[in-house]
Image (cartoon, rainbow, N blue to C red; front, side):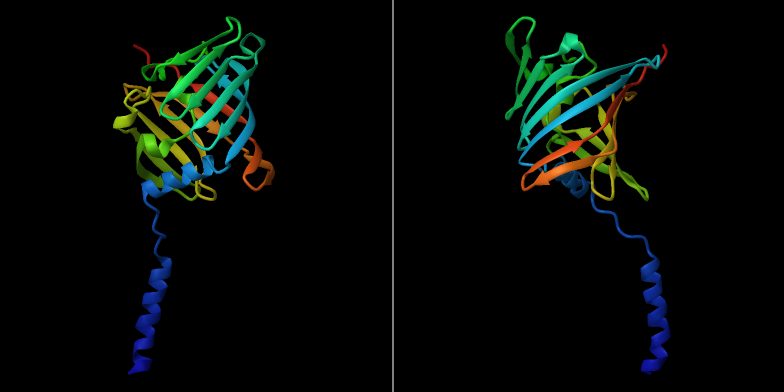
Length: 225
């Protein structure tokens, strides 16, 4: 009797091994993304960003970033020369400050202004705050490919001032890093694309880490009327 059962049991085991692995829940994926982005207790980074407009023209922004925990961030522009020294400080409880060296003034940014352009660039104040997606967005899993978990992120009620109606994130399965982020405007049209590739850890000891990340941000032209 035991020998008679061995074939169907073996066949059933083979079928189980051939079933696709169950994808983690969208909430769990976004929680892992948050942990990866804010892993260091404190962080210092130099970021060079290439902005491409609807005509294909490119401009480069270079900035220095300091972050402590996941709610305190200082961003200071280094290039181009006419924006050097412009700084943005983000603190807990949506407290934000802007420093304009040309006027030697510090200005507090109201929460309803976070979707406005930062110092004449294509960045909004929201773009420059720490990446706390798990607290500000409700995720759903659109697709699971060999390389990515593709998430759809909708602003929650605490993020009503967001400039974006939704985000679409491409999360690398190997390390839960969001390699690409598509941002959609209030009409549901694609507006901005953020790509972060070739992430290289240069050094890391304990809670202190240094990394290099070429970044590009593309501005999508508005639909023709």
